[in-house]
Amino acid sequence: MNKNFALIGAAGYIAPRHMKAIKDTGNNLVAAVDPHDSVGIIDKYFFDTRYFKEFERFDRHLEKLKRKGENDRVHFVSICSPNYLHDAHARFALRIGAHAICEKPLVINPWNIEPLQELEEEYGKKIFTVLQLRVHPVIVALKKKLAQEKSTGKKPDIVLTYITSRGAWYLSSWKGQEEHSGGLATNIGIHFFDMLMWLFGPAEFSEVHIADERKTAGYLELQNARVKWFLSIDRNDLPSPKKPEAPPTYRSITIDDKELEFSDGFTELHTVLYREIVAGRGFGVEDAKASIQLAYDIRNAKPVGINENSHDRAKKHNGLF
Image (cartoon, rainbow, N blue to C red; front, side):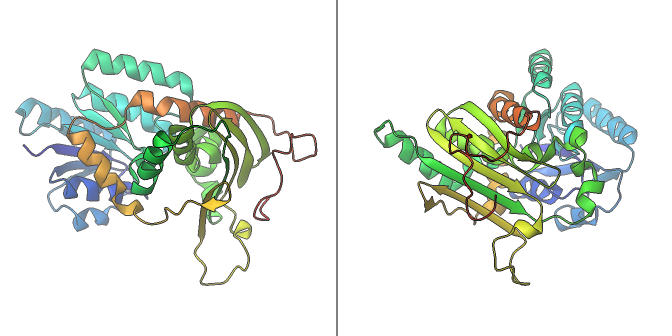
């Protein structure tokens, strides 16, 4: 039987990927809500979706569908709202008898994780989280390769650089407010931190060298890797030459100076995740814990600066920091 979906945050940047995933998996988007009514993108995927500007009316409609029976009720609620509302909207999904599919981060602060797990038990429903890099074919192949290789005891040196240009609007929006987004490490870095820990084990040491509203950088020692990382929304950090036609995003991960090429294939990852989730699999609350904790620790760390006493962990790389 096809499943019925509702979507919170239909006007958001990432919402179309969820709409596409719902359609591509043969399911129905029966209702959507967003306080901003620029939601014409829905027509690209569905024509019969009920749209609500007020959450209260959306709530009432889903409750009505729930009482009409199995064929009409909402089975999944997709959450694309601002980060600080994610856990509240996940709780809402469970209370109406639906599973939740939540964009990153599931929560901003780690102490909000356990209450969600308790509610899963209480309502008998699951909260799934979008950790799409774990299903990227290149990353999956690398994980298999690492599992097959015999350990030499030497930790690889990894350099993560992610620059995604954002204009002046960013800092004026909820994304630029740390209490609403979790800051850069949480809002734009958490997928990469999750991926690296999924591949190379938990974080054993972390220090932050740069931390401001437009860029952050530091060093991580994972169980099986050493990582220098740099995250920025400042277009001036893009590698030279800064040609007008150059893409506004630069993404690079090197492992022992060898580039890990995974630029393609991102647009289909949500669909892959949705197939897994509808089939009863997918990544849950427990899977999200480690990256949420690490992003929180980075956000609250006191920067140590780049100096000769940082155990050589903050050497400049790519001329970026």
